[in-house]
Length: 114
Length: 110
Picture 1 (cartoon, one colour):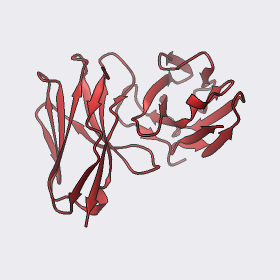
Picture 2 (tube, chains in turn cyan, red):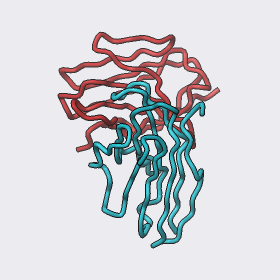
Picture 3 (cartoon, one colour):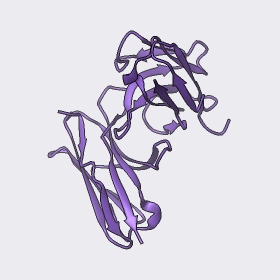
Picture 4 (cartoon, chains in turn red, blue):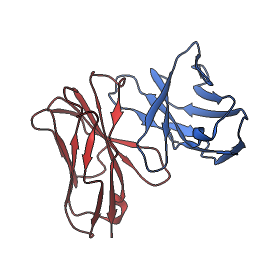
């Protein structure tokens, strides 16, 4: 596609529910990043993939957060046993290079945990 | 202390005014610097990269002071369409990620 596509656009989850957020990067983009943006804050890094390899997951806040990119294209961010503090916008970005240039962000998934 | 710090604002300025944003970063080994723009309920978009010699793109001028670990953005002749949140962004050396500041909210008034 022309841009980074994320789905769903909005997700309301009951506390304790598991959720899965999908990211379709720009075709051919090597690098894929997930960020979490809380209300009134800048995006915070969660994890980074180079093709199918997860090279950095230092930003994942707890072991309830898990990300995968099995075929080096589509990525899924899974949050288990959601809690209210997980409410945020989850942004996916991809880049054609193994660097931070040429970043394109998706529109994000707004997760609300009630 | 946050790795990238910005004045969150909000800044409210009249159309046509000049406005300046500042940002400081804590990691002296940081190697790449950017300003991103984020409209309400939209994704961040790259406004401009910031180079050591300073750079200009139309009405926008970015400056970097490595010694002081300080980045600035100047907007001249501001337009209503400049209303947005401006994010100061740093790429730490050796890391494949971007570190964002909190963002500075700007509103241009007619």
